[in-house]
Image (cartoon, rainbow, N blue to C red):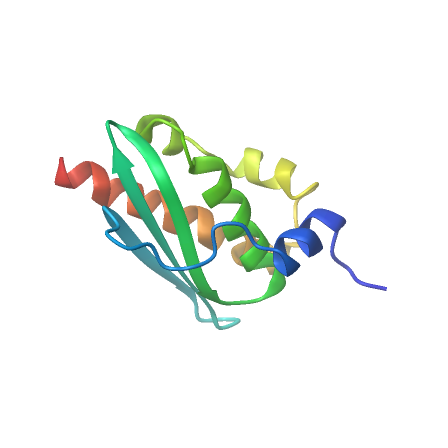
Length: 124
């Protein structure tokens, strides 16, 4: 029996937005040295909106599922709204808060998304 919820398994097995973006407007990388997760989030912005969001990762199932969820959520949003995607939304999307020891695995993609958005805003 797997400890992961169905949504985590679905987004791990069939991640959305996985892959590098050509001509990304902004990007950020994040790592979790405790477990070895590494993730890169890339964004393309047009007219104040996140027109594309993608990620690459060498990470655990929970981190990849989280990256899939947050990049999927950010696509099409206004940049300001994407910057407000929060941990409550993420945990609700994951159908519950992960165990304390795995929390960083889930939040790493969200933190990385926020850094990419911050660099996007700084370029304006």
